Length: 372
Image (cartoon, rainbow, N blue to C red):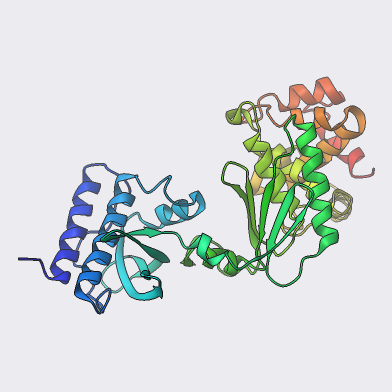
């Protein structure tokens, strides 16, 4: 005799919690399940198949088999929201052609202190007599407009700023040449906001994604064949360059992240502000005028613990280093410094070799660079 939905749901949660205790996958919360909501579908057979698909999805998450079958950005977000979370189906509705959409929340906490870490929407796709749950990204981006410029196909809603788009193409194709790669086609999915980007992936709510920001994120996916941004800018080069440097590194474990971010700021302006190296230099001059006792080497060593104009100082100083290397040795030499060790162990030895700058003379060098 089939189990009642509430009983089956509770047993599934208990099984997932037991597997978690054995050290398999992210831990889901144990304890009583939420009261069951409406059935997955009016038709009992369809409802049972959808419920099986939901349980298969949870098992896939628990066992790690979810990775590789969904976009990596989506899976990373879901997995980050799962530890000690309780999965709860909120609703299910048909999409047409036999497909359904399932909305679920992952809830943390107990005894009245509950918080939602994720709300996700999944497409349930018919597969014979069963359903398979999938990230809705392809369906939700199927109506985007498209325009190809050079080796880049931009997908967007509304209008495309072609001047900015051509700026992106120019840098992309130059970096292809500088890094010794054939200029492969790139698909650039340009969303007008962070919210639009997240919803395209079915991420209705993500407690770790800076929900107070209107614009954020820019990352490579699909082995570097697609760039996705929620900035609304078809030339969001900071995110593209930063991702490209890691993707094309001969030794990814040797990438010095602060310098990679500095190179990205050199080509595309700083992060979301878009401030150019020239503007960043003025900001440093202004900060120095207010605080003449600034020690730039000390600020560099503090890493993310030091900022000017809300910009991480070590990233900005690395942008100055990149500009100086480009001026004196060319872009290839500047890009090569990216792989100077994950902890930057070869950063200062290389600065001494290439620019004659040591740790002891770094502060004086920055003073010169911000005057340039």
